[in-house]
Image (tube, rainbow, N blue to C red; front, top):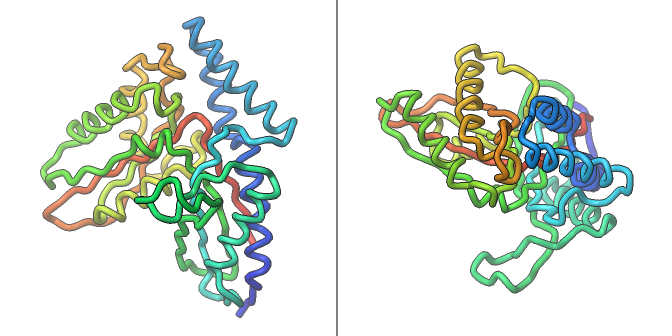
Length: 279
């Protein structure tokens, strides 16, 4: 049995909270640069240049990529041969608070959703824990801005729904999001499970590298088809038009009940930020 002290979890969470908010993921930066190369719309090209330049300044100056440093989402995979000494939830939340304070990030989390002007803080974070095989622990911090989170949705489709119906629903959500959610997007999709499981899967999908193909050939084809349809809308970066409304579509699936087909869509703006540490 391997023992990891909760103080270690706290320290690493603090580091990841800062890193995620300052350094745009390399795969996302590659995607933006790739889109710039193929873009012909002058305004869209300027928008993409501005996004890329902003990300480079953030890294160089060690400041937040976006003023909305989000509601922190923390994903933890704990090996079944690991024992965490101490309260892991308390350690993660204190780590978020430490990191956000140290980097002077904005306080955005309200403790009571019905009292929006009261008790603004850095946490608590939303924490997802999975038990996996082995002696390793993986910790990921995903700061989720709410310009795009507010445009996310879940749909409980009939089990007879076709892929065409799924694609149409996704396109409707993306079109409705428009420039408010700061495209170009990364689109996370969750298929199956229950209402809450589909939403969780859609969030997990955002953690996958955008330039890595889905190992499931059916899902890989569906991702490509949805991405193509989204980019044909012509919404483009910041809604200025152009070829790139989304950088990628990523799908995760789970078994579900024979009587339903839950589908969730979790949108990320162009500043898809996450940082991971493997212990």
